[in-house]
Amino acid sequence: LLRDRDALAEQVNALEVTRSALRTEVSALRNEMAGLVRTSVSTELALEESRLEGEELTARLAETALEYKLTKEELAYLRAQYADEVEAFSKERELLVATHKAELDILRERHSDLESKYNRLVRPARSTVGRVVVEVRFWKEGDVRRYSLRPASGSEISVSESELHQQLTAMKARHGEKLYTKVIPDDNSLTHGEAWRFTNKILNRYDYYYQN
Image: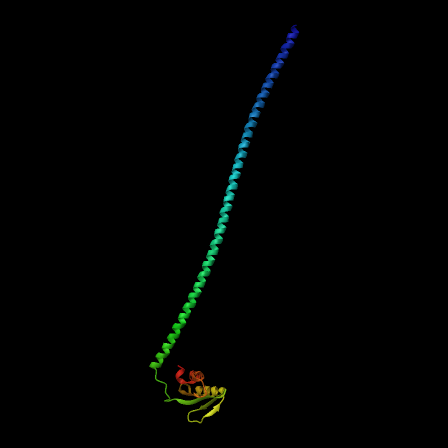
C-alpha cells in the first residue's frame, strides 16, 4: 500500500510538472499568438497605409498629368495666338510700309515737279543767244518715218533715225551746254502724241536747257 501511495504521489508530481510545463507552453503560445496578432495588425495597418499612400500618389500623378496636359494645351494656344498676332502685325507693317512708300513717292514726285517749276521760274528762259542751233525735223510719209538735220550755218540733210541720234550725240559731245535743238515736227503727217513724244525725247537727250 505504501508503495502504491508513493507511486501515486510520483504520478501526481509528474502530472503537476507536466501541467506546469503545459501552462508554460500555453502561456508562451498565447504570448506568441498575441505577438502574431499584433504583427498581423501592424502589417495590415502598414498595408492599408501603403494602399492609401498609393492611392494618394496615383491621384497626385493624375492631377499632375491633367495639369501638364492643360499646360501643353495652353502653351499650344498661346503659341498659335502669338503666331496669329505676329502674322497680323507683319501684314499691318507691310501695309503701312507700302502706304508710306506710296505717299513718299507722291511727295517726291510733287517735290520734283515743284522744284522743276521753281527752277524754270528762277532760271533764265531758254534762248538761242550764244548757242549752237541745230534744226531737227520729223515727219511721216504713209507709215514711213522721215528725219532731217540742219546744223548751224549748214544745209538740211535727210538722215535715218540711227544717224540722227549719232550726229546729235556727236554734236552734244562737241558743243556741250551750248547745243540748242530746235525740233520741228510735221503737224500734218503726225499725231499730237507722236509729235510730243519725239520732241520731248530729243530735248531731254540733247538740248542744253533740259540737261540741268
